[in-house]
Length: 401
Image (cartoon, rainbow, N blue to C red; front, top):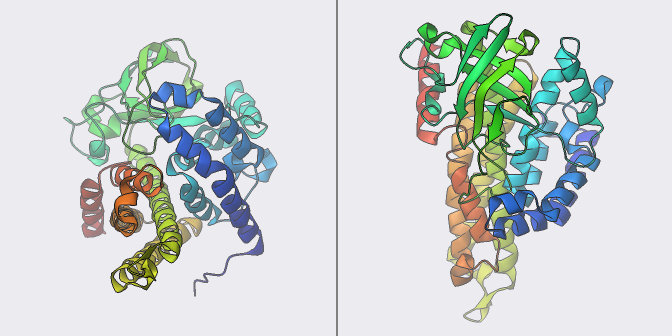
């Protein structure tokens, strides 16, 4: 039987994360959110200091094994940490979520090319928040259709062509590449064999400073403003064969579904964190705000809103924990992850809207954080695919089982 009791080590990590999220992440996220120019936000002292603080505590290497310099945190830790960080700020939590992507690959590829060993060592020793990865997969005309297999007419537009032993990459990735503006290492997926459709995709793990790689301006967006997102351009970028992580073929589908299972679970955890942040703020406010001679928490309409928020948050977390548990036991299930993610992100949108309502007129004021949580929640219904298309993909998976 599954237990909801956390090991002592995980409880310690959770408590540390909770404290850091409230004392450092929350005020940093609010300040970054108020900076109108995204480039100025991501080069600000506030951004540098909060990332340095997170790296000093080891959040960037929690999931890396101890033998390569990581923390080697127990299974299920990541989803708990992601929720707690998102209670502070979901944008910065997203940055820390994607940052270890290439370091994790490097841990298993350090003998293939000197870059991987050097990058892994620099990453685990980083206490300034300098090193981080990105997953460059979405394109201006390709996003949710990355999961459409067996259709030769649907394939990525960015290409990798063979030239001797090397590959030459041309094209671009969209403005929605998370951490695309700041990352110094990139997991890159581009088309190599168009006759195979999306399964003609080749996957590289590369340094972010190869000649021919340039970045667009960071995306100026509604919410999650602590997460930098930007276009990445490739102009005759030459890539050695040692940087190939996966050749074209059926393995691309397996990798994408594996990443999608973990990614959807993580997005759901961020959504629970955002909803919790709004609920906790509204609960504290309702206990203090007086209207009609009573604290508003004593009014039935407010009571019901608060209880409904609590109920939805707890239910969403339970499904997310099931998905995470399946992953940790070696039985990842993409439909469960997608169900957890869509349920959690839809819940976060409803809960944050209702918590704005609890604040009344003050809820739309930037003097209170609930309006920011509302904006952040919206993006989580779209991140890594819209909820509608994610749900359809999950339905197709269930029918195929």
